[in-house]
Image 1 (cartoon, one colour):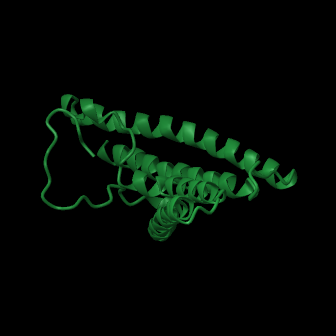
Image 2: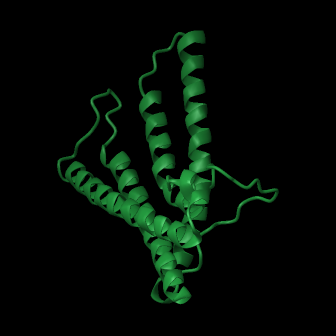
Length: 188
């Protein structure tokens, strides 16, 4: 996505901008593409389900005067899962932060270096975040942690969704970083 100075308006939908990974990462890139497509479909269903849950909560509370206490947690779990699981798909479309405002001001070589730098910094952050998410998940599983509501769903569910989503995001960034570095090496 280019929102900066000199942004070009496209008439056709934007195709995934992840160039095919060279060498050993080609199978990973293909698997991630398949996983991203599947997760996107599941996440769309989860968002619709969260809308239905919240709508039913409003109907039950205000029209039928029935108390509800589980809808908020269920909808939060659905939304958290869809947001984090779709992060890798969004990255495959280059929809995350990339300091695009200065892209048109840089030479093609400097712009390529900017993309590689942004990918490397993003990977470092996402890899750390994924690692911490997996430690939270493991702790929640071992200690049988639950929320404090009357429904008391296990916390390993949102932590697991968070861990899987950030891991997929880190892997997607690795594929794009490798493709960017490989493209740079081919230009020399």
